Image (cartoon, rainbow, N blue to C red; front, side, top):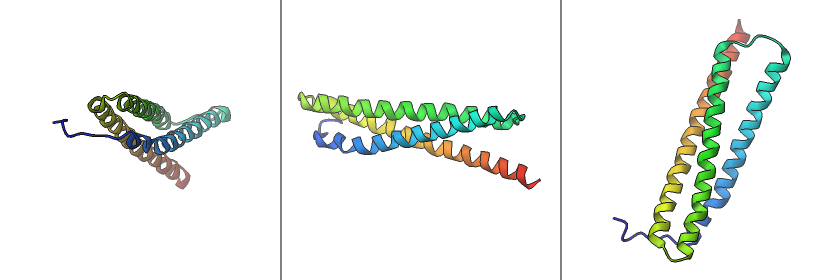
Length: 129
């Protein structure tokens, strides 16, 4: 199955800027969420339990997004090392795993965005009353 796989050293290197920018975006989402939580706690107003559940859920998802992104990045580096020392088949499998982790990270990002939109809609309903 993997007999015809051949990944060149430059292939995983192409993902470096993309993964770096993705991790930066994930970090910004985390910092925005952390600022929101700190702001809510400093106001002293009671927070709806649905909002707290939503915030907890988003924190967990963002953490998983960041972990998957970092692991994808690390596997890209590992892939390049294996290709460099001549283990192309192993490097190709590692690169495939890196791509799957990157895809997982992106799926989590979409899920987190949907939860964030739900939170905004909840807030808009409260303002409408």
